[in-house]
Image (cartoon, rainbow, N blue to C red):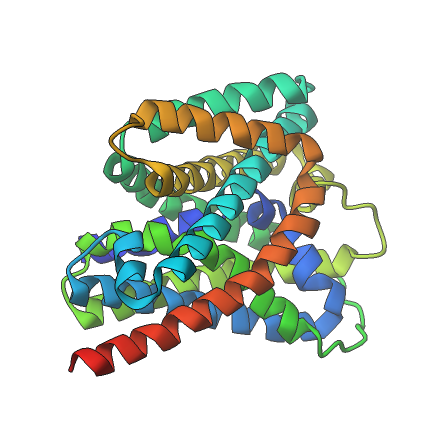
Length: 339
């Protein structure tokens, strides 16, 4: 059970990053579709849980914790290389979003220079990533529990009494929900494969996927409801949830700010670990690879927090859905042919 919880909340920690905890992703992918955004959230949570189960069970049954090795058994070499390139690009973009968000948060809360704080953040993440995937992901698992509880509690606090509004239905929310889960799953496969060593049975893989999906569903729903109340009525800024927390009081502002920073740290570490795992080899040391990934992420972060989410993330989302479906189909065929 300890392995199941570490796996589930390390997965949660990898998904809850700057875009999620800040509310910017929920705003862009769900709130804009009004009440139909709830349907997109339900679909996204289901896909998260199901994909986690699929990767964990596949790695467990194949006896590997290397995502590249798993893909190598079911895909052609050309497709595996294409998948690796797309995954690496997304992980760099994800790291860049976390870096930009840290700088933005430091500026909003303490008035510190964004560029300097982003650089400090990237350097600290490189140091943690250099320690190795196992240590970094165990740290993420512990922080994931804290973040899930903290964000849920803060959102409930801010929702304690608020008026509601009427929304226009948008069926396209389903497509947005699929895209949202899709881009998160591009990089999640690498992390889940590394975590699969904690899983001993098929039911353990299912439980880990269910726990992760449940935690994400609760948080997405609460943030969605809260943002829906204020959407189009006030300027929510680059970090909507922090904007709303600042309207409450200093205690909830700094508490949510701390949760946001932890979420940024865990996802940055997960993205960095995934990127290093993809490019790491005997010729490049882990510290050197970690430094290179962090430097590249810092450069991309200059494009801006919401800009990367609304461009690179959305594009990667639809590509991610296609890649995941392709991988599942190929894995089914692989198992059938092996039998």
